Amino acid sequence: MPPEDQRSQATARARSHVVADHADLVEAVAACADQVAGAWETPPTDRAGVVEPLREVLAETGALEGLPGLLAGAVEAAGYELRAAPVAAPPYVAVTSVGPVCRATVADGRLVVTFELFVVDRSGDEPTYRRRDCSPTESVVVALRD
Image 1 (cartoon, helix red, strand yellow):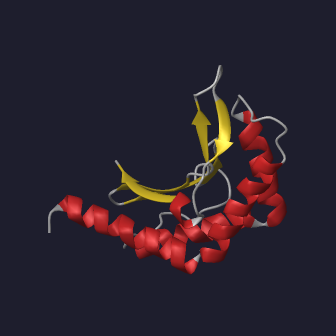
Image 2 (cartoon, rainbow, N blue to C red):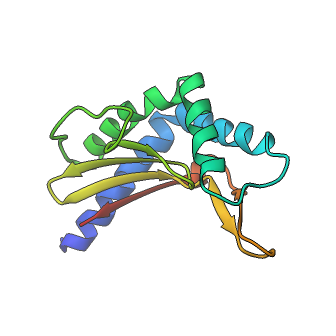
């Protein structure tokens, strides 16, 4: 099988594992994003308006602490081994302006699980962040990067 097919199959297995075996956590992460967006009087124009409140809510609900286990399961489902046990902090777990990003170095590069929960809306006078209109499972994107 060509290497690219193996890579796409590995990421597909990892994504399937995340959305099936960690469905409650995927839902919880999306609920945290809903809570953050629901608290905005006006959409934020800088990343801190997303990152800081999202990190706080993820930590308060326990969702942040669940992400290393999700990452470990995704790595195993993709057919790789972790070089070290992941923790709920960089470089393994980072809260970005898009949403949480989980990363692990594997034999073929970096397995990256991203929760794409927020987008930048550039339709107004200045760019603002808004909650992405998608289901919790649609927000999960898995990639294998060099």
